Amino acid sequence: MLGRRGTLKFLAGPPLVWLALFFLLPLFLIAAFSFRAGSGAIGPSDPWAPSVEQYQEVLGTPAFMRLLGVSVLVAVGVAGFATLLAYPVAYFLTFRAGSHASLYLTLLLVPFAVSYLLRVMAWKLMLGPEGGINSLLGSLGLTEEPIGLLLYSRPAVIITLVYVWIPFAALPIYAAMQRIDRNHLEAAADLGAGPWARFWRVTVPLSLPGALATFFMVFIPTVGEYVTPSLVGGTDGIMYGNIIQGFFTRSANWPMGSAMAMIMLGLTLTLVVVALRVVDLRRVAA
Amino acid sequence: MTPQAARLGRRGSLGVGRTRVPLGPFYGAMLALLYLPIAILFVFSFNAGTALSFPIEGLTLDWYGEVLDNGAMLDAARNSLVVGVGSATLATALGSMVAVAVLRFRFRGRSLLLALAGLPLIVPFVVMGVAFFLLFVAVDVPRSLFTVGIGHSIIAVPYATLIVLARLSGLDPALEDAAMDLGATYPSTLRRVVLPLMGQTLLSAWLTCFIVSFDEIALAIFLVGGDPTFPVFLYGQLRFAQRLPVLIAMAVLLMVGTVALTLIAMRLRQARWAERSPYRL
Image (cartoon, rainbow over all chains, first blue to last red; front, side, top):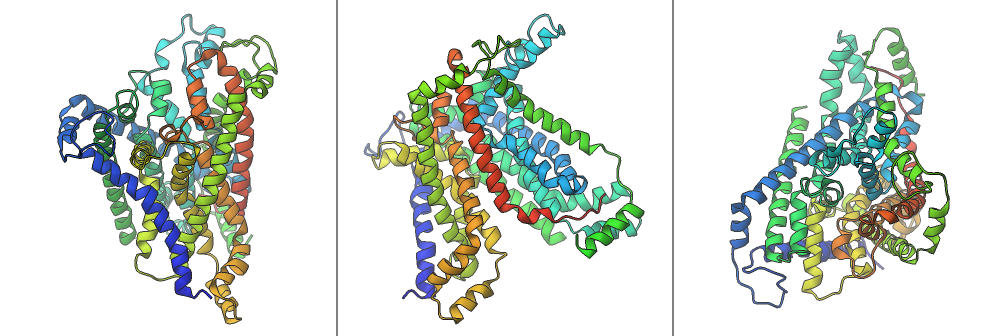
């Protein structure tokens, strides 16, 4: 018969083994590959010579660094816009929607259940030269010529990604607002705070962790995006992730691609650690 | 409504004002913006012409008929189904194990286990995809639906862990102590007390993991062999403008399925969200 200790081994063992084998080991492998001399599709059986040449090349190529910067900016922009647009929605659901909140939340989340590619494709149709926006404007007689710049640009990537993330972005903020003790708001009102003072000094600080969670839950997948840019970004709209993918497909150079992936991973982890510090400090302060 | 909520409600309607920001219309506008592009796609799936522009050339159900004749597309959808079921089952099992171990046991490495189960959430998919790619090349395993399933099981573990953790932390451990005082072993307590109480939560976690897998493409592109999953297949076909209407028709059909699953998953998880205070700001 299994005791509590034996049960623990049974419970913690399989997840630990699975995650070590298929999460930590692959990450370790790209780390190893990134410090490897040479280029091309080097197999694991090929001779292994340690080197930092990949990192030197990535960091020394202004085009790569610029693209990394742009990708971070795009991700900050997408996460920022999505958070800002989702915040009033979450506020509405928490404080104004009343007994319909559950229905309103469901309506908001249905688009998120629609296939990601389909939603990107929808914007490709909307933004294209013969697409929804242009042909609608044209058939209404508002424009003579289709507006050509809508599709295949960086703004197209940003618009599409903000669209893709808004429904999800409302969730962490909504959860944080749900947890706000209404007595705090009542106390603030009793002490003479008007609606705006209550909003800025009670609701905003208490919902900030949710907003930060939203920001990072959108930022992380966006900074590594390569699918959406390849569909609506064109050559002007590519991101750092497209280059990484390229090194593993078209122009096979696995050590180089690994080094670029490691730099992206390092950057993401750093940002998350910094963000956790900020949120924790707030909790200590409160 | 609780008495406290009622009291707050009265106070709210009596003295405390609220800002005049028109949040209702804002919500309505966001909703319209979210649904419009999908609605346009939906319209084009019934359009008689292949050009995706207004005005549409007439209504037809042909594209939906062609879906049924497109063997490669149906195969891809079936592949996604298989991968989704497999990876969701695995991820839900692993996530539940982590949740029970972390909440019901004190042991060294407890926070490490929790961190490990949550970490896949903060690694960009392109990095994870490249890492898996190298792993399967290194151990000389040909890429297939099986490798996609392994990849999806990893990215779904955080979701399963968090969902089960949230529910289990609200479950009184005294129930388990009582069962064990009455002579049940811990494994049989888990099976006969905890599992029945967690049924809805586990189903909700499973559905969430399934949807994560079913819709996933950034990782899958690196992991598929000859048999594509549906998103990978769709991605490969998008450049052929002529085929778009059929693809849209298929995607609309799948959308009905995933939307239904998502709503079920939400229903199962959200019973408690219903209680709310009418106190307004």
